[in-house]
Amino acid sequence: MSAYLALVLKHERGKRGLTQDQVAEAVHVSGSLIAMFETGRRVPQPDTARRLDELLGTGDLFARMAVEARRDAQPGWFRPWAEVEREATSLRCFEPVIIPGLLQTEGYARAALASGLFVPEKVEEHVAFRMERQALLDRKEPPLTIFVIDEAALRRGEPAVLKEQLLHLAEVGLRTRVLVHVVPCDAGPYIGQSGPFTLAEAAGGEHLAFLEDQLEGRVLADPKRVSTLVRAWEAVRAVALPRDQSRDLILKQVNEL
Image (cartoon, rainbow, N blue to C red):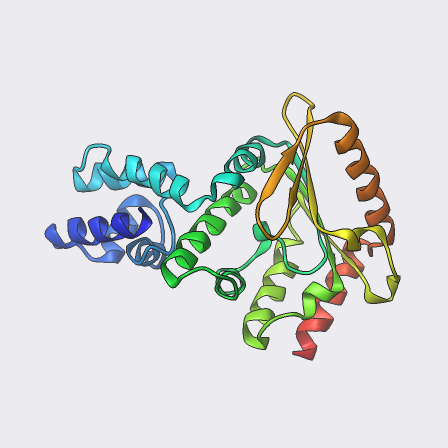
């Protein structure tokens, strides 16, 4: 659906003799973002889609297509967690081998997805969805998000892509409600090496968890199982570096690339 939205937007814009920059100014986004809409690399946010409809006189066409494109880009098994993620008041994420999706640059996400079994078109759809997920960090009042990443994840990737990713990681980690911690390689064996997991707190105080493997992911709501992961989180946090030291380690790795 994102590819179809891209074609329709390019057609409607061209039919009215508008440039990408003119459309961008009218709907209050950058020209580069309009270009990404027209190549299927990004999907308009609801307010942007609505402004596109108003500008181009297309009713609610782009609003509907944006919703469908965002839904199509999500693997079926991920949709329940995507909803939890959007409504969460706090998120705690641990990743031992890769930069978490909410912190990935477009280039890093594309490289990670292209290394799997996806055909190029599907890679772009999943990249677009991953970028859309990150909008929650840009809200006026975003959830408190805490990430713990193993140092090994800072060393895996093509140098140019990885350098951009690590610089982005250092920048995002300066935001008030985003905390990034790194478990250094010299921490030794620790419980987090068993695999990644994410914890979420809903607005009503309910705690949920998400586990993902090679095939799919699953949401856990059983209090006993979630409590076990909360204890694992505390053990992981205990071996991670403080925020400032983590950022220093990230920038040290940048200088070594």
